[in-house]
Length: 219
Image (cartoon, rainbow, N blue to C red; front, side, top):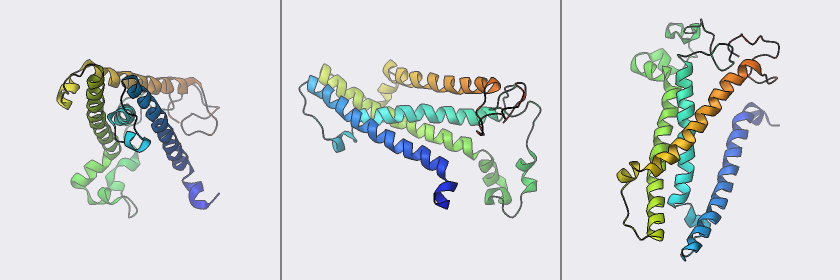
């Protein structure tokens, strides 16, 4: 394996899987959408045209929204809350790590830490901020993609007039789509937090050592 790939294998594997599954989603979504259009006697779309539809945008951003809300919330909550015995929690008695003190910044520390002031404050919280900003963008993508799909469905089914994104935001349909994903994401993380108390995965940084006691907290 090339040295660069060996050093970036985890992110390459995850992003590679993302691209493959997104492509497959687009293909199967395209087929599903054309089947729905055929039921109403509408002309089918090409795969390329399908990528610009609300059907595709809604499906993509609806899932991204929940994923980044979960990850952003998780990063933020683990800074302040603990779970005794979990590999996903910092120890109960651990405050700020010495390395988090900007006064210990060295010449190789990121520049916002060395500069201080507002850049340092933002950088100290940049991971959760970035994840939550991606969540916000995905939320808007879901909203605008969803209203296009909703209006198309209404036009095909009943010829109803289109509604605005603001009006769609107030529908139970939009929030049903969001909540069915949000609840599953937080369930998955909650289960991981609790299972890591008692179960192990050899060599994974997400697990406590195999020989660690159940009461030991942190990986």
